[in-house]
Length: 363
Image 1: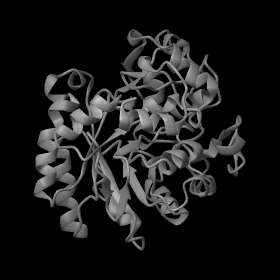
Image 2: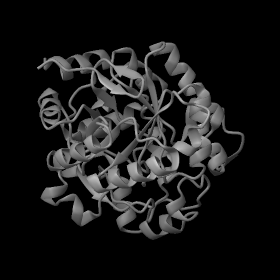
Image 3: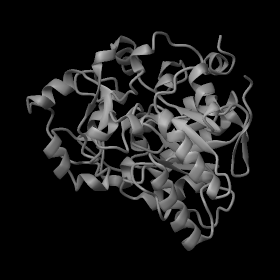
């Protein structure tokens, strides 16, 4: 099976593979730039940009961490990351993933547009007012992440009524993805919520709004999986964890090793201060949190609104901004390592070029 182009707004992606946005610092300029260069869609994560380039774009640090959302989501750093990725991929399409749950969401979307992002991807909540923040940037394509046909319908209705537009594409994420889920613990294991059972109803809903391209995500691992999703009606796929196994991935080598060493039973759902269950690798941090002996929670970066300035972090036993950034810095003892359910299948580090060849040619 040879794959067709994936169209998102005015942009054409030669290989219908979107690299998932992974923060803090897993998908920044090197990974996203190279994925776009090789014909997929590279996605920069806007999470934790204050840590970029040894925190040099953070105006203020407290305990060596970016203070408040103004620094944790540093505008200068995000623009520098986009510009560096652009040097790698030239004028090929480049996306930025911006969580709806983050503090300063609207400002960060504007930062990404000013920095030259072609496509904005948003999950972690229903982004019903997303088009508001891209006014003045008519060419920027908007892609919400949903977990059901109902969620897509709500977004399309609101956007149509308020802004006279619909999404340029939609990412449908099933419960096998890494990081935060759009389902409760119980819903994650239900048969009807598995990706292969969600694609058809979401594609049917997307058709009602003019044939919005549906990109399937969560557990997609190889060429067979991509063919299965396209066979079900998806226009492309999004893959995150698989790209951690590349030389160009911006993550610390220690983070890559945690994934390479993970066994199937090590990857589990866990509570998160964001209010959704999150999927990751059970590590030393997990055991510390279970015993309530985890690192102190201080809410220096004020990263996501649902955490209520550290209240939810205290409830679940860890600060997500600090623990993800520890993983980025290579601290295996206190880092939080997100992974999709297939993360244990990572067994080598290869180039982005080789990975995309494997995914499209099946070698």
